Length: 605
Ligand code: M6R
Image (cartoon, rainbow, N blue to C red; front, side, top):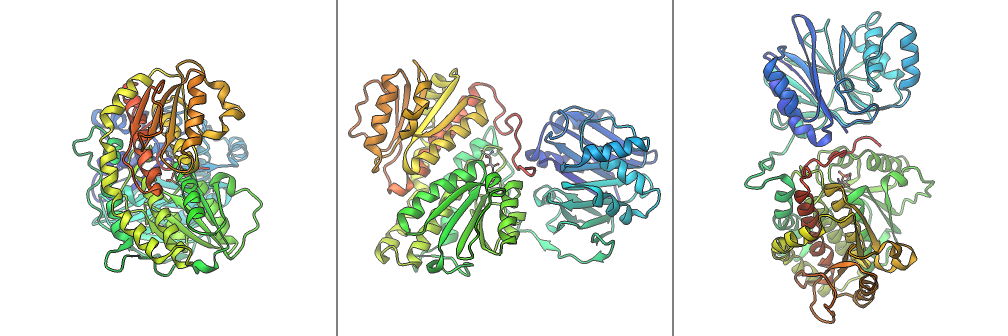
């Protein structure tokens, strides 16, 4: 987490740094700061809270300087406070840092013995003082490499210097960092998104790389202080999706544009004329796949569970799912005939990246389902399946979840066809049916008015339980995650059949329970589970797609989504749950796009 920006220019940099920090706020928003080099040396300004607070400070007391670094923080070591905000500066050096230095306590002890006085509780200040110390004896690149060799953990760094007043240095190990090329200025950023408004020419640093920028040149060095060449990439010019348009927040925009993003994604994968799915150069022959392992975190993991049900219905391939933070530390018997699929919106999630890295080290076939195609995960996998959702800014993932499920579903159909586990006519039918999904999503979105009424009834609840069976189970998990992350209401998702094994004890008069029961082979069972919670006083919202066979007595609310191909239920059931979380959070006055304690891209483990 945390966002880094650095600029070396021929003109004052502070306003561009602040603008870029606003774009990076999705990575952290506990505190922010900036340091520039002016005639008096390092000029550091920082504050708690959002970048707009920093902007106000700079408005009152502007920072000059043609070279500078900026940072938005998501606290790891030390509480969110002004003193812990980055940059961390000595007389000579100012550092912004993303990541965690695992041996910071030991390094701190050594540095304190040398007389360095620490002001903050962060792990970053050791970097500032190590560089300051090594600069006494070494030139710039050597001093940085000496410092890096002392650090254990993961990091991306942006550094400026009093003595080298025209230079910004960047260094990477484990946390992403990119360089951008401008006219009369060059940039450093935690990701291409922060740089996109300034340039579309970028280079990604690899682990161990150092970059040195000033206003007219960029140089790269490896850990042996040798100059190296790196590829310059041209980024695609996405449509301007950073604009909220008429929406109050990005989340409502992103929920409401789901039918469009789904349509775009379907167009990318479906060959209309041949009624086929475009998937060339897949890294493993579908016939030879022994097992598929699906890995992700949070919402992305929920899409993996939904996909498990589809793959199991459509193919004979055994499926395993895991959260990346568990997968990366398991003792796994890797098999070259397995396919390992990594799902991530940002493509920068540290645990997912580490899980992928483990697979790469074991020489197995990997594939990623990704929104940000320039991301670290996309670049490391053998094959990338983009979800084509466009930038997702709201911290709560919505359109990316729908996109992840869609691409995994398309993959399941294609693999099933390639293995001849589905008849040609069923395959064609599934492709034709897919084209109906955007319209079904549009229709489902019309439930928003009803959801607003339900949200008012649920807003004061202490907790909410979400129940589903089969592919509705991951949607129950996702509904609960959305509600807790946005409205800070305790929420849990369960397979409906699990209630009797413990959670039923939680049911008391008036506790909201959201039951997901589309008309599928689980329907009757789920409705029985619903009756069990109603009998114990639960206030039920039933989300279904059928009006038959339900005794509506004692059900507080029934919300009916359009009837569809059973494989589409997870998509359509998700939408009312996204809207419910949104409206409960709105009624509670929560920050919709930036919920407390969270960040959009989780780049620390
Ligand atoms: O960028 P990723 O998809 O890898 O992110 C994974 C999770 O951090 C993410 O889905 C998180 O759970 C969302 N905030 C949920 O809305």
